[in-house]
Length: 245
Image (cartoon, rainbow, N blue to C red; front, side, top):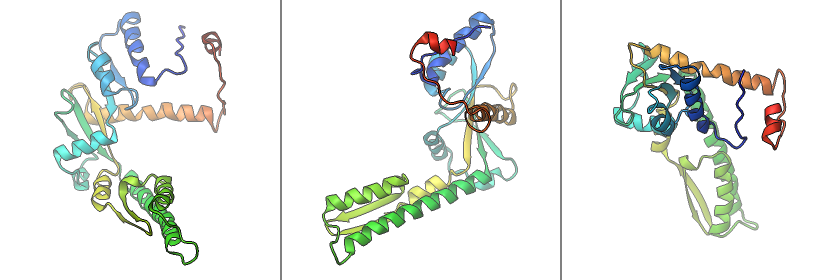
């Protein structure tokens, strides 16, 4: 059995090219479809590695890409998924690919709940800062000082994208970006599978199922590191020791 070790500072996408070359040369496999998450099979990896080698892929889109897709095809209303839990389409942004839009209602509810809780928690912290600004004794003064305290509050839950602050030397107020929040909420529970395989080679449901298999690998890693084996990281600083380990 051959063992290949990558340097510890090697990013996951950088390992794809080596594995493509290995499969083509060592096993003489001509037709293969790679299944990888959006961090592994990136658009750059598709363009520079998989396409030149004539290989297919199944991956998914990042959130900004899903937002662009929604703008291109119009909002994805939940009613579109009433009869089937997926919607297949194409896009000029991804030529030669099939895109399968899926909706998970439970995930949509969870995203909406979490967003609401984070917004409420952020506004509670901002209210504390605002109270410090308006208190009668030793009030917080100066736009710079108020902005510093408010900035820590709004960054705590990463809600900067959803709130607009107005700060003066003696006041602090804020409003929600309702349109921005609504745009994000429209994408709750949506994920998009991308594949270069034609429908006669792989149906949409099969493409989604193939991508979901990745969760088994992720579950195995979590099992190794936490509840089962609890293997702690062992740090090595030479290629020989890494290979031995």
